[in-house]
Image 1 (cartoon, rainbow, N blue to C red):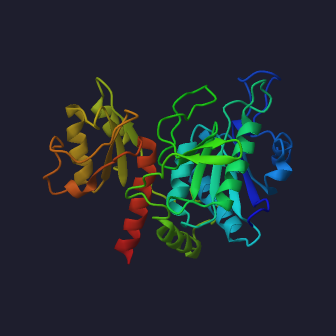
Image 2: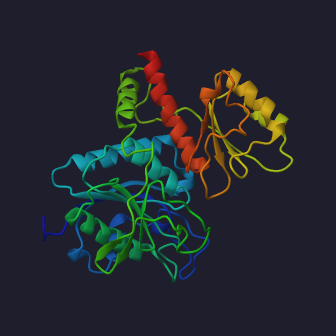
Image 3: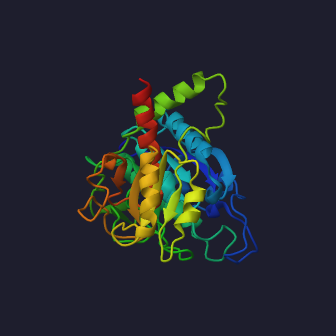
Length: 350
């Protein structure tokens, strides 16, 4: 396929990119109202970018996505990638939880050579300054480039927003309204005309592409074998992991009441370098003694959270269940802990 246009499966899930509202306005719209074919009509030069096969999966805002949606989207991507007539997959998604879906897919899809890309928009299709068609065009152009010249290293799942290409660990929404809402210094490439200008290869660390592919496949097989489970509803497949965000004057008693009975895991978004207020230490000890796993992250956008001497739980018997998030955001940490506990549960049962 040196010169041919790639065969791309477009999977739509709704979001602002398919939103409609009052003509010319960016607010007051309803997400997921525009069909995939209509979205493609606004893409200039489509015939020279890709042969597109369309699959409409959901039509909702990403704030309403559940574990069931994530698992069904993953399966739809897997099915598309396994098709010999598919060279890559493009997913349209809402921006609000785009980084969570991207991280989940990065960890649970196989590290295949075929590229998968997510894109979105900050302005609805009916807005005067709609950015959806441009992002769709840039995503297809980037997929064409990746299909022709695949990087020798790095993941196969990407996010394209405002001409920037992000790895799943790099992407985070940083502005609630601006079209370049995901812009930060950590992106892998920039789309210039018809080619990608590579800046770096994403640093994955321990969160490598496909790390939980096998454990997710095993969990789904066990789920399907359970006669009491409904295979079209996966909302309880992954353990519930609440996120506690720290701040001044935190009411530990109220937080404690909210966390009864103790969940399998909790993410605590501490302040600064993941610092947890002393008022919360008693509750943390109670949760750890009850068998709960805790991942300590930070509400601060930049800078890693690592195991340090100031952590009072380092030398205690249950220190192994107190994890450090590294560069993961609290929202990525939640997904990582869900998948870690899903894998651990399989190890225990085996």
